[in-house]
Length: 484
Image (tube, rainbow, N blue to C red; front, side, top):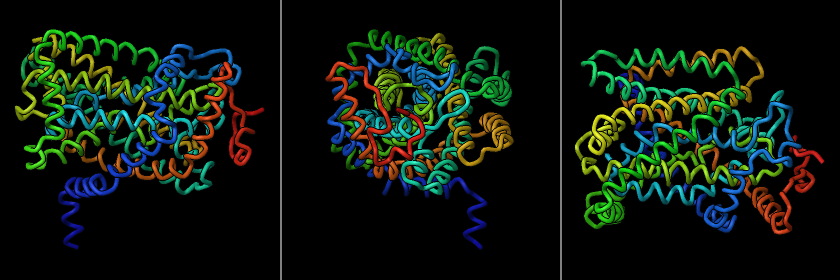
């Protein structure tokens, strides 16, 4: 009874302890091990096939793909890529990177890079599987880990378990984190100009909730169009600003890289336990940002109308690079070059202070605008992941309608929770999702390897690769799409 009463007295402490145990002893080892194995199985495609990824990115919606669409409202591969990227490119790129550096030091950035480079192979596997086992909807395709667990592994209970985890993590906990960061940033920026407490975070949360309802009640078509319009704009703008800051501090760049590497491996940091902390924070916040192996992005990848599953697998690998190697690195450089990463601030406050250091008041307002676009687009994509998995569990439309209002409540909750509380909720959900998703990918990995070989065999023959389910005759009865 004492343990139960202690839990209810401080539940977040118990949640954080369970999360730390899973990350320390299970998740990191599994993530790294899978990333290395998958990299070997596809022969380092995430490094060697960047040219093919770029070709696919700029040729989305070709006739070969359109011929296999599921109706006039089909979603092309770029739109599906944009939905997944809008989930990846969120507050993890701004507040998450700052928290990783604050807790783990500059060395955490190095381990974020390593996790992204190898984790891109994991993203390839899960997205390809999502395409292989996708199902037909009225207006578009749909799928994700829950669906390849049911139809690929013939394990509905496993799919339902994953669906509950992703609904909790992305449909609720992650939404609170995005909303919390956005509300704090907008409130702080406005209050610094208009006076303290002129705009409390809860007021921002109310407005954000109303805006969210305006998109999520429009369905996947509106969500995909919104993401395809907003994501490229916000990513390019943020990149250009970071390049400007890098150029104006070019003399400090060699020292910055030296600091990142030395903090990742240095003897002084090892003696103080900081290397382990850097690895932990780099992997955790890297996964929160790029989602490779977590099982979220495949829900978007499955919606694309394409001619071969590997096409979307390659695009999702490129999404990991875009998120971590480009966007997260921009934030890390801005913070480290400011020299104030150890001033005691955390999360978005640290990023905002660093921006102000480089650009004055313009930096604060630019970051506020970036946070709004990053966090809002992520909230919309996260909702879609939750809805997809609600529909996996039950076909009853009322469940989706209830979930839409739950989404509004969680967005509203971000206006009065603290940063530490939101991270505790998200970390546990990420660990549980990642654990079950990686197990399923391992068990289904042989089909991805077959698809990979089939795709590049056709490419060598000069074809635009097309997949038919008879290519995998052993499981063609489990595949609903990809008809002859």
